[in-house]
Image (cartoon, rainbow, N blue to C red; front, top):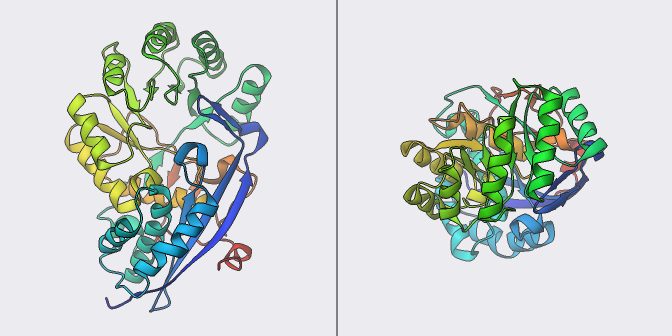
Length: 368
């Protein structure tokens, strides 16, 4: 393969979350998402697409910063370089830009997409899979009172049958919220909770005690990201712990393994810096017996497609904990010509090359 990177283009997108599904958690209210779409063009006229999930409160990155960094540093470093191996291009990005994993992930995804399209195979195949052709998924529920009832009704209307409840906002209210959801969904529905690091250790212990009656399947990020001993302490209470905000890099994952701090890690394409790196982290976690799921930062269809391909390429994907490949379910519109094949219970892998998705024609015209 002699193709080289010929150009990198970007386009900004900002979408409001569907009102019925607005997420309210310990890290704030997520009612709008800003994205930077990325297009890589090769000298063989193959295009690849990626997506920067740019939520400043979560990642410290936004569409403006991502666009500036890509145009000023990243594009000059990779344009003219051979497309293969993609890992070398990721290393070049690291040499000109520190941190900013979500920005790098958008470019990395576009590079991997172009690589797989050039081969004529789905990205999951280019990554060494697939080990499965569908992934179980769940949706986040948040709010109280009538709003919570509305959110659940909307989620069920979309076909979702597994959920996690946003907590970390005050133990008494958290327990009451979970109790209400359990009453609404019944005893047999999969239900976890996500504190987004919003509890202290003492609050987490009290919350776990209060939640036992409602049969929660896991507690996600119960304490602050840096408090790995706190994660381990909550595990010792007998409830499965999912680490999310604690795991961005391979070094973070190593610390989780060393402290025996989690039963499962929630990996993002954005946190990891791209599909290949997310896959490597997930496979390493599996070696140490830690479950892996694909978590969400409210991705659009391109980002969700990347999640799906990585999930299918993983040697082991959690059978206990559904992933969060929710794509455009949170938004009133999609950025894709054709959405992912999802019924709310599972999302299915297609056979098309690369990510298998194409942005809407009106969005393609916005790339610069």
